[in-house]
Length: 564
Image (cartoon, rainbow, N blue to C red; front, side, top):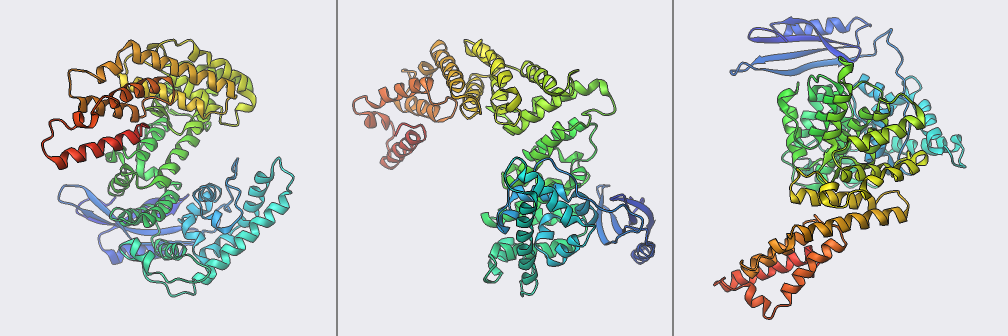
């Protein structure tokens, strides 16, 4: 960064990173030097960053010139091998879905980083599609790789699947080629206005053409942070749901790029980076750590609002891929590896469940197996046992095992998972099933989370039934032993308060469908069957309109609580 009162940094691109080469006080001098640097065929890119010193002492940076080129002597760009290729796209529309774009982002990571483009920009721009296809045989190698993965274990040949993929790609290229001939409106400050302004053209949806307009604009911004800043600025004031979801998909594309390093800022370890990614996904990230604070603040606000479900999905997916990788969680100090793993493990535990469910359970197991002396099946078996013991209580252990049963690991470890479930059956009361330090509500939520995880697991039906019945019995005993229902239905309080408390309890999701919930509903029904219930319910509300509203609101609660 330039020092003093500001100025202009001239940066060159080296190994996909921007490095400051020189500084100048005048913009014309800075631009001149950047262009001179670009005359060297070995220079992959040059840019000028204007540095402005603010009154509070902080610096504001803005890229005012940037140009990249294919540098001679650079290694050819290759696809990044992937271990699975989902979804199995059958139409051009499938290619534009989130899962497909996530695959494209991983597969073409090297290329996309070299040209600073997202899948959105490539898929919606004919020129960029052509550039991709002309680069180092990427199209042939990518379709061959994906086809082989998708037909594995099936009767379909790899060549046949590759031909299907190529047919779909031809359609996408033809669509983009035709779109470039259309007269489209410029990008509006409100993306919903752009969506409404694009013409209705046969063969194209308005959503597609609006994304063509957006892609054309984003291509002009040759930096990840610049693109993300533009998208967040569009999304923050947006009130149209369709427009917001379209912007979300492009932001999700960006979060699959190396922009995540600037967003998170310096992290002491991979474990800390994983936790920060999960915090960012939840809108809880501390932006003071970021190297792009203004952009990070906007992104956090959008994620906190739950406006970006696709972006949240990509962040969590990226964190889980890092967790199950072989990269050290604490590279600078191997003695802290287990401690770092336990920190990540704790971050994955959320009220009533495990963040990212089956994906997290698989990642926890594969990471845990790296601590074992044995390898292969034996190592994973030991890791499953160690992970159950590392979790804070049997309820969390049951969640982990239930989620693990939904993964491919079940093929080798079904018996191991079932055997570990003994930890649940040994818990006869809720204090043995859930941590005693938890509140009454959190214990019920956690036990219910274990119930739901088991009910939707990949376990055999008889095992599912045994686990859910056992947890339900523990919850029923807890309600009775702790007089939970009696405390809610205190006869010394007004009937209205008693009824509302009980019905809210039934609809709060703290109990699963079963004996425990039936016990609570039984008490509500007893209250409802009292003579002149409605009259007693509104007793003390002098205003007839308020009384009528109170009854309407109560009946809505009855519906929510399954008591209509």
